[in-house]
Length: 144
Image (cartoon, rainbow, N blue to C red):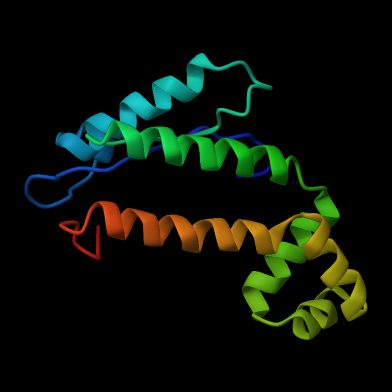
């Protein structure tokens, strides 16, 4: 979605029935929480770091997840175009050397761009949050 800056609202809760388009009209706890999270993100000023918000029935989880992602968003900042190119190539190829070859750069340049973009920290944040969500909401189905 570059160069757009997105606000992300993550709702955790039940979804009655099957998902069908249009999803912006779907009801259920998860969607209501997601809409509330997006509204929360909109209320913050552009530089407030409130671009990712979580909502669930567990207020302590919401506070912890929002704090983790506020810190994450502040750390990651705004990767440069070259850093995004390195990220995109790495995601497409799966290895630094193959990403470097596709970009016609050396591996150390691609590796440095991944590091400066805080790519590895972002991946760690995602993995940790997946684990936290699974432990706090064990009743959620894997495919949701």
